[in-house]
Image (cartoon, rainbow, N blue to C red; front, side, top):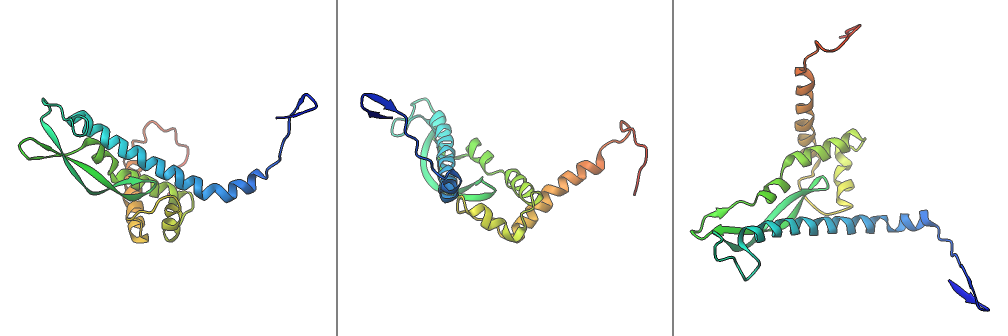
Length: 175
């Protein structure tokens, strides 16, 4: 708003929105990727806090303690992303597996992302370049992508071949 001679005037400055988006798209994708990683770290930290208590103030009745961090990974955006994972041990010294970490590592997510990308027309050669535009990860070589696609599609093919056909009203069966 601009005030001219006691009156408010609405001033609009046209921006070429498509051009602005084209310039900013890569940065927005990277920002959302970084925000996603922060959320994943918060999920892990939340589980540790529920099991042990807040940092430097563990619950005296908790049977577990924080035990530092170690390198790990999560499946995010169709690739494996390195992430330091918190460690938890029982008071007797046995490692405690984090349920949330296990869920964030499941290859099913990677297989689904690979399958969806390849079905959408992305080749195994170009898959790495497409997903690394958001976050840099690993486990996305073309041979790995091919194996993930075979694993994902073989399950779907098995389900398709093993389904019952008696409920279908088929007129013609062409083999």
